[in-house]
Length: 262
Image 1 (cartoon, rainbow, N blue to C red):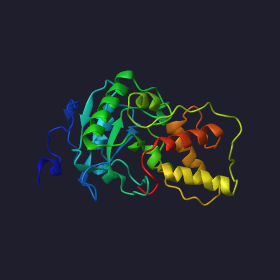
Image 2: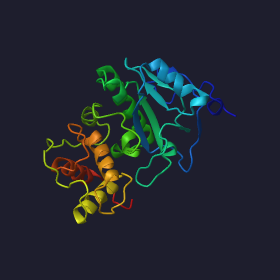
Image 3: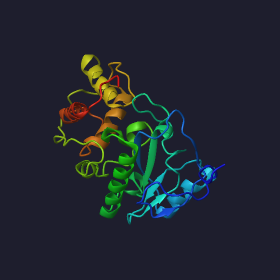
Image 4: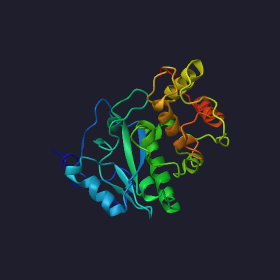
């Protein structure tokens, strides 16, 4: 058993890491030689110390590869070659083992339950630098830099609508298109059925969200639309498919280099 397997000390994967604080909560990647995605989270806890302690506690059975504290200090808990336990029940583009497919980055912030405070500039600068470093070494495409809420929309809201995805996009991290302002009237309404709903669901599924084109704008569809808004149209997160939301989705799909079957 190697030090990385046992939770003992290991060499950091990124030169940006300030501290290595090994977590025992990891395993072997399944069907992935290396990660192809980066998943961003908020810790949802009052302090960085409490969050790091939880991510290292064997009884918690949760971890991430990295933690970025408010000061911008980057801590590595799990080697990138290992499968950290950060994604939980999740799915993206049909892959249901996102722990094996991804590198998890926890960003210290109390989140929605803590009032959704803004993320400090130094912290975001560190997140950008870390994501750039990971993406370059692991060949992670921009559209594979995702929110926890993207891959688990029914369970998670992090890193939340106050997270500055636009700033990351301008810095070359993640995919971003500038959305139009929200509209008061929905283009497709709750409980609506038929081809327009099926079309919207198809577009969401093509981008990567876990939804089937069954043609009913039900609670599940509303939840997925809200997750999309939380990442790509954060000015108004209500699950209503207005023109701004649908156009942002279309523009994102138009920027992609892969085909639906790739």
